[in-house]
Amino acid sequence: MTDSATPLELLETPEPAAIRDWATEHGILILAHSYQDGFLQEAAHFVGDSLELARVAAAENPKAICFCGVHFMAETAKILCPDAEVFVPDMDAGCSLADGCDAADLARYQEHLTQKLGKRPVTVSYVNCTAAVKAQADIICTSGNARAVVDSIPESDPILFVPDKHLGGWLNETTGRNMTLWDGACEVHELFSIETMLEQKAAHPGCIILAHPECPAAIRNASDFVLGTAGMLKKVKAAKGETFLIATEANMIYRFEKEAPQNSYVPAPGASCACNLCPYMQLNTPEKLWKALHERGPQVTVPQELMAPARQSLERMLAVI
Ligand code: 13P
Ligand code: SF4
Image 1 (tube, rainbow, N blue to C red):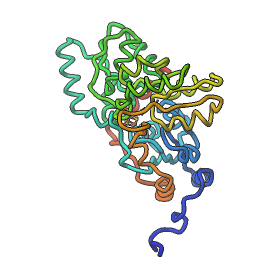
Image 2 (image 1 turned 120 degrees about the vertical axis):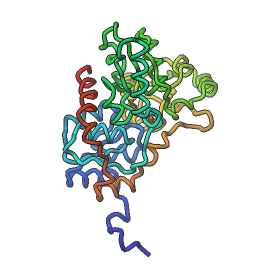
Image 3 (image 1 turned 30 degrees about the vertical axis):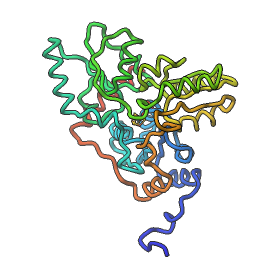
């Protein structure tokens, strides 16, 4: 028996290319983060890292965007394309980094540091944060441009970096700054196991380890390169016949295998499982995407008073790189 309330075309989810064509016909741009599974990546018009997707949203300025990623990414698209309808397959697809930095707590901490330092620190926020935090930050960065953003701030200015202490720690190490760090972390990257990673390294002699800067210092220090997802893609595309051990969300490997099939890829394991998948990204499914496209919802909205200040922080980032 079928549910009489369900439109017939929703009963069966088409293949990715047919979904994309349907979205094109209906004026909807599908954006997918590289941490989405292969089906969603294939259904999307563009697949990328946070920075690339923000740039695509700003440049394309479409009438409607269906964002396959997590909530803060869809919010970013809405801030950059205020006239577009922005919707997502699953409204519950959040992020532990964004959830770990409350805007009111940040305001109190900014005030505390201003008193302590006798000068208001420049607040740099990783893009993995809410629109309210973006509005309160001075400038945003992504994993792909974080060093350039930090380097763009005069040496004499103290910096508060939020919300990722691991990315912030890596930036302190590589830029020589002494930024104050918010105590947040990505629950996926924090769970990589150094012991198991070293066992895998021994099992794959000569392998090259790539780690995302959201990983803790022990993982970063044991890696050959610390790179955001776009930097990793560039690295593997330039390599020939290498084996890469990948310390980031395991779906990234789908892109590597598609765009750089000349290499082999081994996912670095988590502490208690064989792979590392972001539980929030996994909430998005082909069925939910197909439904969201038909319903043009659930819609992501950003309170009007946050739009201009959040956009200013993002535009400062886009002006750097
Ligand atoms: P990128 O900035 O590399 O896209 O990563 C985003 C993210 O959520 C990493 O966990
Ligand atoms: Fe957030 Fe981590 Fe998931 Fe990225 S992988 S969206 S930082 S929880």
